[in-house]
Image (cartoon, rainbow, N blue to C red; front, side, top):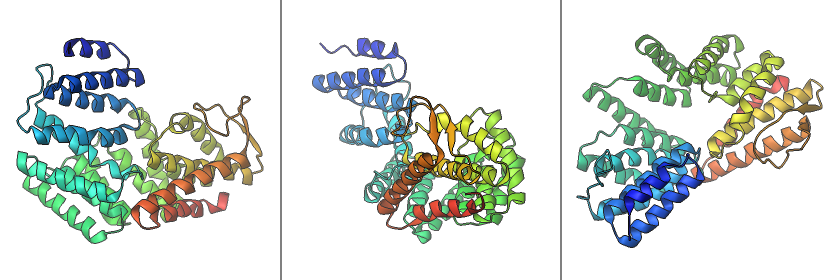
Length: 367
């Protein structure tokens, strides 16, 4: 007999992780057997939300969301069970909004699939009265990746118009404008957006990304270390304040390898244990690029081996935690190039490989 309350109680007692996800999959299976549509939808949404603890959340969401959307489309008047704090439409919209952002992070998601979901998301928002902020942002990011600047900028234009119409100019809106400005090397707009964020939202964690982008623009693109210095300091300060890892690992590594190798190695030792285990391809590409630069910098200075203890089960790991810098440099370089090539194959261009080469070129004097 189908007993949803007991199933919910069972998995809610568990700590986040695979065991809890497995228990929710069992609940999904039982709801499907019972053909209980509200719980078929509810347990799938619970699975998606429980996946947030994993860094593969967006990929997990991409895999299960078609089932969520199918149930909702077949029964648009479906009501969530009483145990849910949100109605079905709001629940689906929230997950849909996150799902359409997947393409930024995973080369495994075909562009055609994401374009199809973007149009479905737009129709969903228009039908149920949700603003199109996430649609314009996700569309711009997708078309930016596939080198369609005209469509990217049109989505940015529509996004700005919607901000004016909705009288919304919060930190997230400014951050998105700064993101595209950085991508297209529009330094004036990036600086302007950063100054507005500093003035209107001085305590916002979004400034982490603005300082990181400015570090990238100056240290990597322009190789102007003096101009990059204050943004490196501000980035580090905010990461400490918000107790978060540095999302600009490779950019910071370029700057430190060129200015202070001792600090570069300290930064690597601090950040690597939390970053090396990621399974998100975009993040892994960022880490591997920075790690290669670190190891090649050590090699150039004459250091042949390093001792460092890192989590996970990497193919190069040894029991004594003592490694040849050359071996690590070759491994991380190969990994960065392979991931870059996969993104380029998905996107139909060579931007990722060009970015990888740009980072190595920026650090050329120390590697």
